[in-house]
Length: 171
Image (cartoon, rainbow, N blue to C red; front, side, top):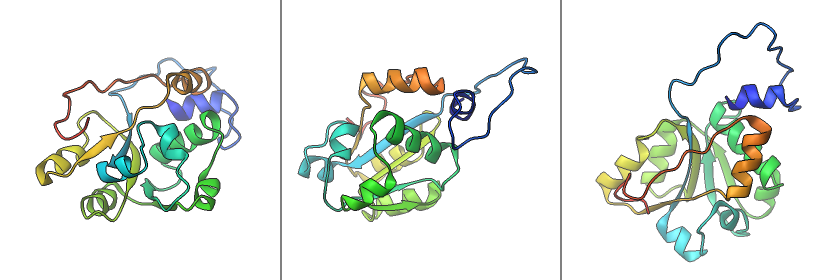
């Protein structure tokens, strides 16, 4: 959905999409954007929302999936369109930004080699149960309602709410 919405909106990073012959567009399952922060890092920097995280001007070890994937694309569009920042600006703030596979993100996060990761996955993503199994604490960051509305308008995304209790180790 996010690629189609962005292309339809004329996003410069995507070619224009002609929908004249489109008959049906469907989602098989929600692709939830998870922004996961190690709890000790969240407490150290008083991070409660994505806006709080983006304000940190110290070393943050961050990763998302490789450039061009839907995960990286939607996070990048969230940064640019909603929060008026980008990877270059975050690196200037001290962030160490990587782009790697789900498996590598999970491995490095569990080894405390990443402070924050962001990616899209269906509900019940592997990393959170793995955190629970290892008894590591993490925080899922919410995105401000105003920013979600902007993304819905601009890229045809929808809001997916993770309810309290959906995961044991994540507030």
